[in-house]
Length: 443
Image 1 (cartoon, rainbow, N blue to C red):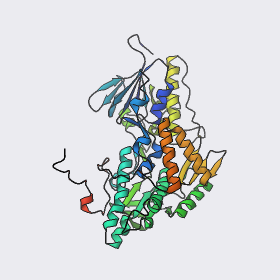
Image 2 (image 1 turned 180 degrees about the vertical axis):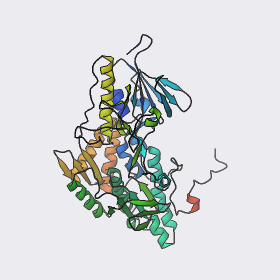
Image 3 (image 1 turned 60 degrees about the vertical axis):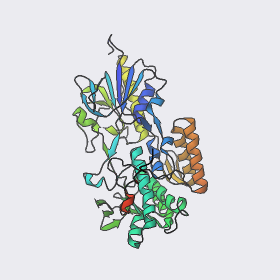
Image 4 (image 1 turned 90 degrees about the horizontal axis):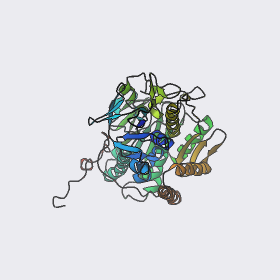
């Protein structure tokens, strides 16, 4: 498959878990690699909620892609936004008009927030997928307390101190635990008019239990642990409407100053670029070897695809599945170059983990289940292990130990600027909806 004019060209769209895993697997394969991403960094998404809830800073969970591949001269990094794929000419098309040729293509573009056909809810209930989302959410959370401190109307103050989280999967559960601890531990002594510990966190789930993908005993433990922290858990009630300051679910209307979406995802536009069949969430229905039907040189992985695992169930949209998909696609390309049969993708589920607060978590490795304090330590060690670089591992470990011992979170800066249409805290005074005008005399 390599011509005399050039080495085999592998283009990877997406610098997430799958894309980076593919690059690592292709080391020494004798191919030229181009990785394209619209952001310049690789993000450790499982800890994104900790940036949103002031436990960690963005630089502790994200690394420049160029830094990660600086010792790989065969890897070229392109900062750009993909708008299409010319399958006939084998070209990836970018927003600025550039076209990048490939011999093999790996699509690892992940997913965005999905609102089940109600995109009009997005400005009122932003989700958590990017660093911009996390810093915007952190700003919204902190501004809610600032606005409540200045609010004299008791009902409006109560609404400002109500935080609604829609969706009780791992992200929703982890956010709920972190927000209630932020209010009741970290901010407890920081205000004079309000009592932050009176903040109300409401977790809303349409399904019958939290952490639906976990075994039922662990779901039950998680619900009880959240309620002990002070989180209100509402199950079996689907959200039917979201406005700037209300959530309607079941027969209830909740006034909330901050609303967070953690209920669903929508795949990237990759299926539209390729004009191939996709499921209801937009995921490409790939072949068992992760190739796109009709295109044996195009692989799609991670949240971009729908594929069944060995148990006949869809492979979950988690980081480890994306990593396994990236490594498989890289090995498959090497097999093609060697003239060998391309193997089928065999996903191996390593387990499910979620944290509930600073001293409780649930771990399900199949052969081992852990809860509580011991589960939290295993959860922490697992996440520290997968961080990149000794400095970040030490920094995150120290931050967590400090929070564990004192309850205080240090990354509580309010930064201005919006992320993709996200709103400022509703009900806040108008002069808090934008940063102050700069000093005309400032340089």
